[in-house]
Image (cartoon, rainbow, N blue to C red; front, side):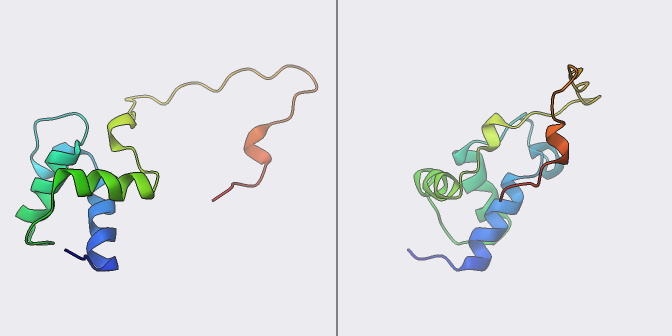
Length: 92
């Protein structure tokens, strides 16, 4: 089955959100949970967890490795002469 770019982007958008926002009692998305969610949302009629995993892999998205902090980690203290990496341009 072929999916439109819009459908794939909607899958990615859900993958980047916390599962709790969709009423899921899990801390991280799995391919199976994402497949179930996009079907429940009516984004696609059917999709296998394996295909969801392939799409996420192609986009280099890893929702199962995302981390959330109540308080963000403190930046490390720079030594004299070290460059501040936050001042470098971001790569896409």
